Image 1 (cartoon, rainbow, N blue to C red):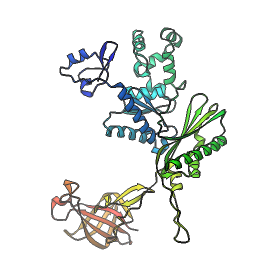
Image 2 (image 1 turned 45 degrees about the vertical axis):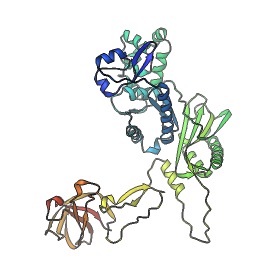
Image 3 (image 1 turned 135 degrees about the vertical axis):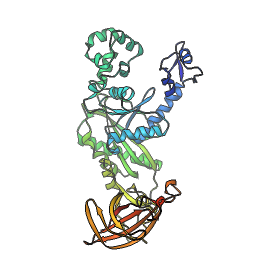
Length: 472
């Protein structure tokens, strides 16, 4: 991709093949075409790219964090302090971001640090695709990175190189007064921002379609009780606005603007659309202790960043039918504390380990149900474990089996139940067969074991024996 800087035509964005050929960003187009005859070039659409980056920022706002902004020309910056608990941990969250972008056809790198500047530097110039810097470790993490990682103008970077500086660590060791005198305040400011010595506010992306309420204060507030009281007022207003639109909130963000231009945020998610004031207030105020009000909060903004249609329904009469406990509030509280809540559901598959799947705790009831014509163990091993046996082929159960170093003499057995591979899904399972037996040892313990193969033909399996479950 090429663009103009004054009268010069320069290469601004490259693919892997162009980089491998020796072309770098900023290379004149004439030189690039001389290096690679037949080079394909396209005019860079800066306006269209900026618009697409804003749309991507809004997409990440709905999924990952309450404070998201475009980090032009090719990145996003997120303040995840109030939302990482909803994604398990920081590594899982970053991995999810990178994988989601890869699935959409983008090359992506990600980093987490205490400061925007350090995260920006590591994401673009670090060695790892995903970098997580411990609190206070940004100076050591970025010291070896080149000067361009500081987001300085090209002319300043060139001037610093003339003076002999090559890395951020070398620049950080130099006296700051002469640097300011020669290059202006930009160098010192970028260093201080990267090291977390001064703040760098993020202006979160917002669009008109979001349902939002806000409250500005003539005098800053700081007490947790005061924040909780105004949170309830904001939630009441938000629920009224959602009701007018026929919507329910799935994810709400409370952003608190401090007097020092800093932002603090709380994100709460729900397992289904809601506009219950009491439930949303409980989810938000449960994390007020994570808020650092600093010198005071001058404005609070509550936004429903993800909303879905919600139609009011008639409550069931306890006189006509038995009431059913609603566990949605409890599930939401557990989820917002960083834990996973799920339940198991049946899947249409004869292969035991594929016949069950985790689904959301409040997902709609499945109509498939569990098969009852063959007994199944209470505990099904995630992966069948090999056992040593002695059995008469092809259809007899084993006389004994050794599992985890313990010998179990088989007293009773039932089977075989033959299970065929899913040949319509996997070619390698066209001839696969398993013969399952329910066996009982001398102590009355019952196990579910199988032979991989039919006991006669090698193409049906390894003919080895495995344990797959334990009965109660």
